[in-house]
Image 1 (cartoon, rainbow, N blue to C red):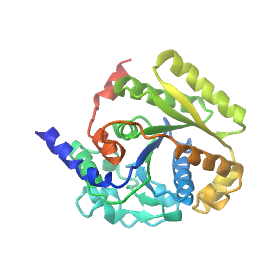
Image 2 (cartoon, one colour; image 1 turned 180 degrees about the horizontal axis):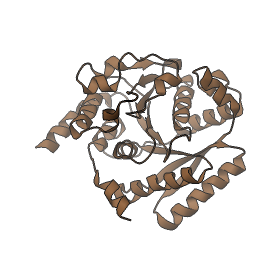
Image 3 (spheres, helix red, strand yellow; image 1 turned 180 degrees about the vertical axis):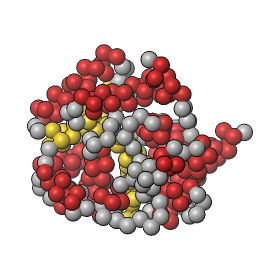
Length: 296
């Protein structure tokens, strides 16, 4: 009975997929500080500059910062939606080049630990969304929380941002391990971020693939090597993304290339697909995953 009700809540998404096909890309990383939000936002802005209709969901439900990084003021956020004070459409703000932003709450512990009822409420909120989109980019929290796993496994493509630090590699592997073993997800796009050369990025990718090939049934693809570029930091100071503020710099060129490549990634052929697929996979909630990982 409950399961039927939950799936009925996703039926609203079918209206959205009649006229458009939305590609859902989750950008994540095992640890904080690897630049995943920067990658997500630069991708979104680059896609929008190329005429695509793009929305970014700030899925870091406790430490949101997408709106701040873009210098936007969000009067309301997802916490107000889950409290029943407004609809999802009421909180959407517009960023550079028409990118739509769904802001979340910052510094709110209960947003980082949604109850099952709130989880359903979030899915119901997406069921009411009427925007026609080409891409929905989901910027997750750091780590391997149940919400991060939910957003990752619900996407059609998972972009994992890593940098050349042992903890980044270890945590990225931990995330892929859970998604591979518990949810049968084998395809991951890897972005080597803040590398000093393409060779360093390639070596970082090789380090990661050596571990995954030995222990996991996973297929990794090196999607991009983003160079360490002080222009990224300078752009953040201006509350802009580097592809907008300094479009001809090394990092911007690499991020534009990543966005162009992402626009060619095929949408998998599966029933439902698109945003309906995203929401209905969010409904398949498996909190046992973390327990299984910790037992190993």
